[in-house]
Length: 304
Ligand SMILES: NC(=O)c1ccc[n+]([C@@H]2O[C@H](COP(=O)([O-])OP(=O)(O)OC[C@H]3O[C@@H](n4cnc5c(N)ncnc54)[C@H](OP(=O)(O)O)[C@@H]3O)[C@@H](O)[C@H]2O)c1
Image (cartoon, rainbow, N blue to C red; front, side, top):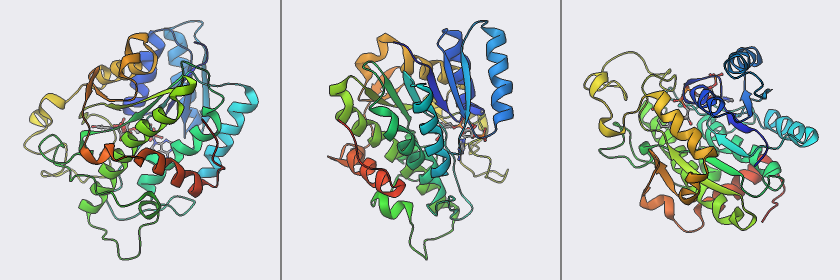
């Protein structure tokens, strides 16, 4: 299998650690970042650690459809098609509803829509054996394994992208938007896998576990009672708490290892398939999310 492993959000937390793990295995990399300078610094470090390794850097703001379109067009023009796309970039917005440059709710726009807008033009050009890895989270489930997060509340993608006026600005609503975006990421992997596996392109949803060390909770005020900090940092997360390098090694494996092939089409944690929530298996959900995103992005449906 040729082509680089494309990682979105490669300058931060899990994405950066995954880039390091992929580089250690000797696979070429395509780092998608929103800050080119930081991306180039990372690329230099990776090349120094693995002389001869091909590491490219491209700029894209996943929340901005014109930026994502420019990235996809550039990859096609340069024939720089990935062997794996790791849809890692993500954020939580807890202080009220924020909008993307296109007017969509920022959590859904970044975590879901931007990745569909990137994948749609390149998936049909990716060769057999290629992979898509979306990033899920136990937060989608709510309950005891969700680190204090409220469960996803699914309505439909079009509404979630355009929350109606009067939608509460309370932090809990922001956390629901995040867990719902993670449900969408999981269902999306199921939908992509169902649609593309006939062409040899497989997809999987990866649960990295709880990693309080990353920048994901940057919007939370530093006080007790917040997710990731409840009952003292050390004890949060139980068996689902992971060190970032360990989780990144699993994610790199998921994206590249032959042994991971039997796990494609599933929700995977620590190299084992796990059931995701009942809602995530709803028939046709991934395809609905895909199609609604294409419509929101103004992309013509293509495909298998
Ligand atoms: N941390 C956890 O406990 C946990 C648990 C389950 C799932 N996850 C998932 O893991 C993934 C990585 O998160 P993390 O924990 O590593 O958080 P993080 O440290 O905040 O990293 C997020 C990355 O996404 C990038 N990003 C955010 N918005 C972007 C945009 N509009 N365009 C391009 N890139 C953007 C950030 O870029 P900058 O470097 O420029 O800021 C950063 O590199 C996310 O999908 C998250 O939902 C995390």
